[in-house]
Length: 171
Image (cartoon, rainbow, N blue to C red):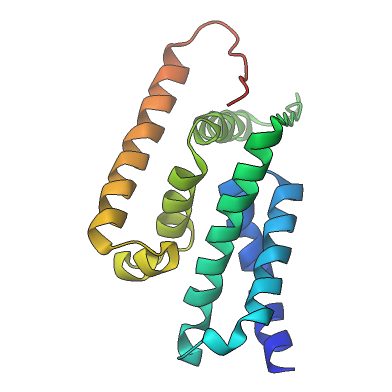
């Protein structure tokens, strides 16, 4: 019952985190399911109940890495397109354009780079706790965050310079 309460409270946040890392609803659902199953099986590994969130996020990030590898091995490419509403006000259209630009830039990053950015910016974890979630040393986390930020910036700048329609390639 205690695990059910903890898992229920964390489910929405786990799903949003996985969705940001994997960029797919189906893959995120699979990763969350795998992580909750692993958490249930290894619940005795939690030494400090106050650290449950960091522990479950570490399991989730590893599940996201496995899911990304599985999909990459199958060579599946999923493209989701939404047509902008022509009646939307100018600000909403600009916001949609920025969101789409960020989405394209984020898709160019590896799952590991997306995980670092999500744990730092979306979850808002301090560097030390984010390093624990990703199961890396603090210095490694900081360098990965720096590289991921630079890669995202480069992807956004390349997207700005591109005047032809970009083709999604199978990684």
